[in-house]
Image (cartoon, rainbow, N blue to C red; front, side, top):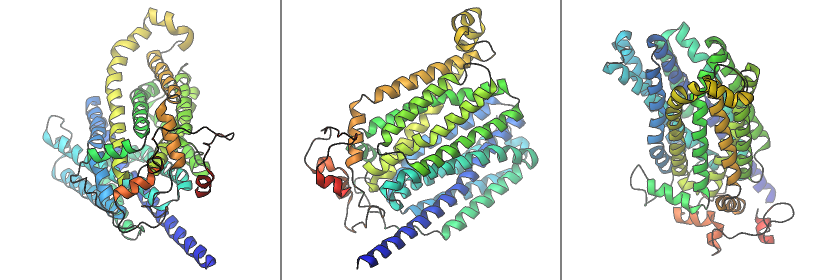
Length: 503
């Protein structure tokens, strides 16, 4: 009997692993396609119009659309099967890209590139909507990790997701410019439509073992803000984690705003593209390392330590205008991004009930997506009109020349120096907060979610409230959420024997 059960469990695990691999491949194709066309649109508009304003508006609009729709996407993910959500994402993207292609055939390029006319903004908006809907698939992918992957392997799976994102970034960074340069916008649109249709066809043959989600009676509308907040508040310390990630993105917005100007100071435009492609391989390495080694027993601690390292690195890799220092520093910085993102995903996947994970991922994505462009919009004028002129003057050279040396972009270096130091200080202080200790304790004690396949078969009659109780062992035993237990000699919380055995 035990042998038969073991065989059955092995078959089930094989099916889940194969399903997850297929979803990853499908996501890679979809991510490459949507990013490819978004990058190509930006390159095309700048090459044809030389308008920094137009490209800035396109980038800002893309991030704001993500921030606005992410919470709606999260509710959709919780309400429907993950496979259905991914198919919907592919169909909407394909329809949007086809509509953009029809606009391109209908209107002359001069009309589509007229920034004062309606056709440019309509054309750009249609393409952006086709790209933004891909975030719906990203949220579904995060919950699919919970659905298919056992808890002890989720950090590794999230590392694979980071690797996929790195591959997509690398491919789009290189081939978007080549496509616009050699083929033009028309053929670029045709490639995007063909790739998205391929994604849709592949999805038809992908099977994700999942039950129909139970509809949450407390989420009557598509924008379930209250349900998202309730799910986050139920996990002590989780809101602080999301706020910290949002703040981390605010600091990251400084680098987003200043990387291109600094890079183009050191390199030609052609060489800068090659350096970006090299730096993007850091995503691949970082994701692969997480996939191989995981994040340890305390992913929140791992995340904070990596953020401190990112702050130190961000403070020093512009201290001199020396291109090897900058290129290697960017590569190392990008290598640290996947572990930070994987840590946040791994924590949410364990401490939030599966039935509400889509809304929590959606809210986190909305807050974090809005953060970086806000900082970028603020820091760019500050750098151009205040910091850079100051550092080019005699007073700036006297005050900071001993540390930052001489060069054309010392103002940018000064901003990045202080941004990195702020990141180090905030991450260090986070170790001392009550939220850090509460969330770390909850993560260690939380059992596998009964609503996911990897955590065990879900009962047909299980509702959201039952999942909540199962996932909050502190509340279930009648204790307070902030109760602390002394740590044992190995650094783990001192737990009763039955708790250790159950894990």
